[in-house]
Length: 77
Image 1 (cartoon, rainbow, N blue to C red):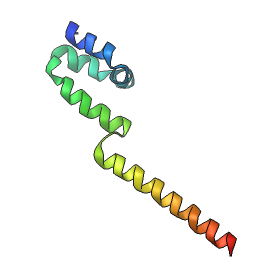
Image 2 (image 1 turned 120 degrees about the vertical axis):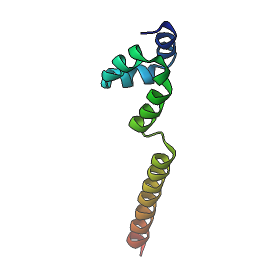
Image 3 (image 1 turned 60 degrees about the vertical axis):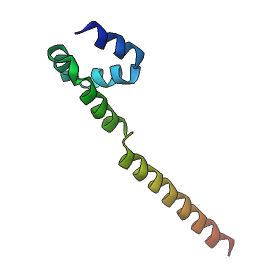
Image 4 (image 1 turned 180 degrees about the horizontal axis):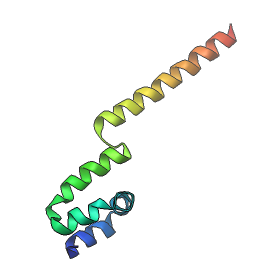
């Protein structure tokens, strides 16, 4: 693997962990170090850091808070 890619992975342990979970990326990066941007995108999807995933998580949390508020309101009455 290219030394620049190795140095980048050492600076970003989350990406290194992603590669450990998906070892095919070792081969991809050995053959074409330019696929590093593709690796970042895939890692974001894996860790749930894309914008739609964040919105969905926030929506689910908000729905949970509303449910607890309704439950507390019904118990109060």
